[in-house]
Length: 401
Image (cartoon, rainbow, N blue to C red; front, side):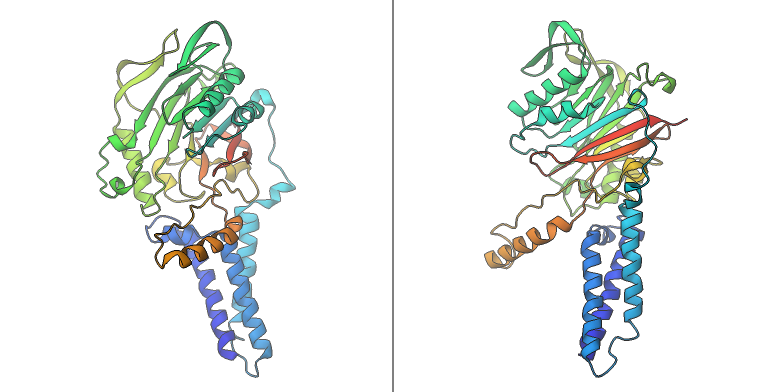
């Protein structure tokens, strides 16, 4: 038993070391991103479990195995628990909330990654109920769900019109043009008119990263210039929003993905699209550069607080860190192990059982909102839809004084 007590204490210190290394390095190194991705609750349970096993084994032992190590494990467990509750979940905001602005002074932004799921019931109702000023839906399947989403955006965001206009292929509506922009992957709706927009397909730009090409999906950045409107006229220029949807391949270095995406955006030069009176979006004018963003929102496929985010959006701040609290689980679904799992179907079934057991304890917050210096967050929420892998981001913003 003394050996069990000592080994359990050493294992507890190793788990604590993993947590600290992951938080210090995050995904700045390829190897460290895997330490960083281990959910905090998994680490806390493992660390406290090791301490408990060491303490129980030491109690029934005739010798003092692990006695010198257990206090360090206990201190580490208490410190990690406090850091997660206060430093990562910001549970103090459940008592002391950030100051709220009036609705007239608030820009509400919604982002939802459908992740190509089959029809998600209530998509339109959710968008309308959020009362967003800018709504973004990514990876919705073509068909009834997409028509419902676009219809909801028009109903809640676009002023009425006496004429019917084209919105997206096979979708028309009696609303003013310029309030919905989209392609096969991203749909953006705005209460104020979208002046210019374009899609930067990262697969079409040579970033110089051979690793980038190994992913099945290189990702996309959609940028929009949106009228600031009377409420935010003091901004003095259009609001610029980037919508990102980046590769999910866990084998890719997130630091290289973010740096490559930034270089791809900086290298992009094409005419921007503008809307016609009939609602058609057409490339107009000379090639332009992508404007610097006020807001970057989307599925980054790396957790909140990652060092790699500064490669894509240097100097920008996370909206959750300013105004959010709670566990913030934006992604909840892990693909089941298939028949080709190493070890055969028996191992695959065991992996699936463990995954189902541990998944409710995983806090992967990969759908994020980053803010430029002119904006601050006053409220951050994640809304659970009727189905699907991703929660919906609803973020309230206001201009800084």
